[in-house]
Length: 341
Image 1 (cartoon, rainbow, N blue to C red):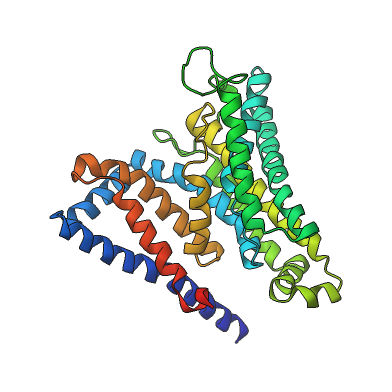
Image 2: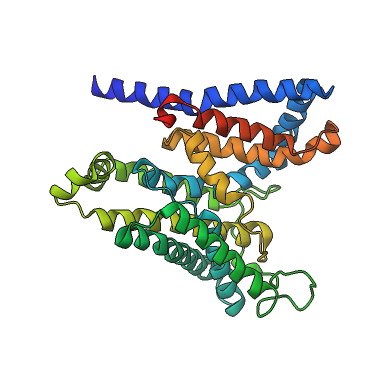
């Protein structure tokens, strides 16, 4: 009976947080396209074929889904506890920076060792950046939303400085690092695509966090989420949980930065977190704060981000129309009665 009720609650959450906002956003976007004499069916067809038309394009959707899934999965526990880590862009930048520095420092290292060390360093760097707003919240009750946003500006400024000076490539006028060595590149999942092993890492993290949710620690986390005062009386260290949840999200964002530079860009740019950072939070909300939901929403978001680039050629529509779609989805999500309450 309890299991049945739980499945019902999960399905209702996915419907209200995901299916309904997407349906309304599709309707609004279609009306907008009709108002400018564009064909919504053609736009949908171009998006579909540009994403699922071949193994290569399908792989591009997976490429974009992997870091989104990592960010959203590690944000789930904190969002459930009503702790809002908005610092993913800065934490992604920190993870990407750590990956770049280590890969350029020891380019001749064995590939497996270098990839592993870069991944661990990226997670530590992201967690370190997230520690700051977590500590400020625990120590002085400073809003984690404001402090994590502030850390984004700090990290982006540091990246811009380094990539315009000490880390700038000698062969480029733009702010970017030298190319990373091939030994730091993440292995591919399928030949003929850019889909990489980072997707498997993200799925493993989702599974581990799902298992953790059923453990004693998961029970304490749920107690902390529902009533921090009662949890403290039961022996739960609220400040420790708060900081740990912030650092978990930071570690996931750092790993997303590792994926971005070690598998996609192969060098560091100031905008390495675009648009993964805030999109990861969006994916977590769209997935109904449910592990299965975020897997689906990560792939849908990744497919949409890739397919948007084909709209200009295939349908003579600006790819920015996808931003309108995402904006309506977010507005619909925020306008739910439960969100307003």
